[in-house]
Amino acid sequence: MSKDSFKVTRPRGKQIPIIVSVPHCGTQFPDELIDEYKPEYSAAPDDTDWFVDRLYDFAPSMGITMICACYSRWVVDLNRDPDSRPLYTDGRIITGLCPTTDFLGNKIYRDERSEVSKQEIERRVNLYYNPYHHKLRQLIDELHATHDQVLLWDCHSIRQHVPTISAEKFPDLILGSADEQSASPQVIQTALDNLSSAIYKLSHNHPFKGGYITRHFGEPLKGVHALQLEMCKVHYMDDTETKYDRERADKMRDLLTSTFERLDEIISA
Figure 1 (tube, rainbow, N blue to C red):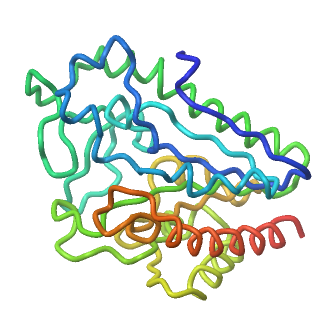
Figure 2 (figure 1 turned 120 degrees about the vertical axis):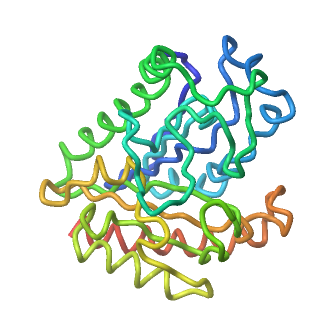
């Protein structure tokens, strides 16, 4: 495992039973792989959840543990099934565990490969995928040892419009609960109530209902709840979706802060 494959930020002050996961903020590539990608793509991997780690960097001051990926999702996608089982079967284009194209279908490797070999996928899973998931499990177990209920909040962002996924623009915020299976009804409703109290258009489980992290770790009957929040980038970035916009981000941070406060009240009760 590379020592830089992920970064954990421990909470400051009193710890609360919430973990924030940011699996798609990474922009780095391992030294042994960087030359295999087209430099115009690897220099700024477009499918990155840009600045989501910065958007949520207030979380540790609330007592929240935070884990962020360092490597690009093009190395290995931490929110895909490790056995490459599809997350959706409705015809949308979804990049794979080790993608060979970006969301728009552009080939990202110099040799224009259409797939990554099984042996190479296994190598990347062992080196870069498993360590992140093992650490998530460890962080959850640590919190669960001292709290009856724990929440994993998986953070994502996306362009307003990705035609290979949807012909329409996405809602501002999309809460995923794996068809209401990854968290208790009370936790889900608390998140929905707070997120819908602002100026943003909110959707639940459509068009995204949570990726592998939400579906795998969410076990509400065992006291482990998991939710995914997808948001359009323009609500914390500029209109070009390339630069961090502090004013927009601060409004979103206020909403996220109040949501975490309410969720903490519920799961700590």
